[in-house]
Length: 203
Image 1 (cartoon, rainbow, N blue to C red):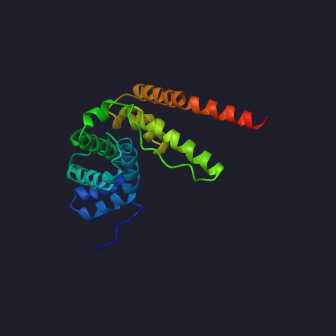
Image 2: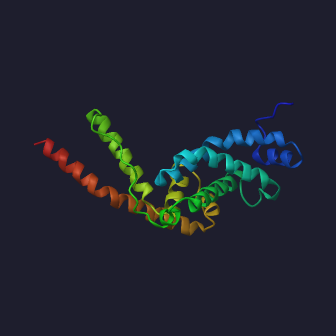
Image 3: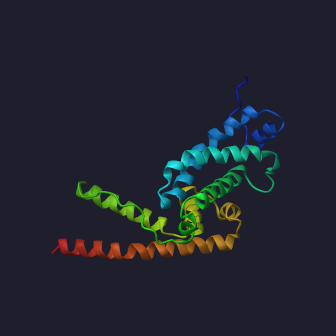
């Protein structure tokens, strides 16, 4: 089997696949598997279902392959289309899972806590801050959380996020504003307590 040219663009690879060179799909998987897995992991963390991430990643690529003949790169980039499939795959799984309707609507579920009592002080503070931020993100409604993950972790632009969420750019900006405001509100008590503790320690 001839080697696949890694310099080919996504669009060129897709044209080859549509012409029957299905082995070229391996290159697309190689390019995006880690990013899609990370995205799905972020989506599943709120529900303590990270163990499904690899299976849902494989399902995402399978669905994409099955639908590749309908993909048109003039409408969206392959990566944007793939993120859309990944999100829909996760939401479908959540709806099938026990109590999933409650999960999808209730943004106040409490994420699992981690043991912090045996860490060195500086590492404790850093780990606790990271954990609090993750908790705050996990408490966001699904669309706000997904928009934030795609923007801050996946570095997608507003237009790409809008296409993935089947929304508008202005709606995405509104989702991100509300998400960041909510996180700030959730973290303010902790920030205030930390500042008071530090002030107390300086006396």
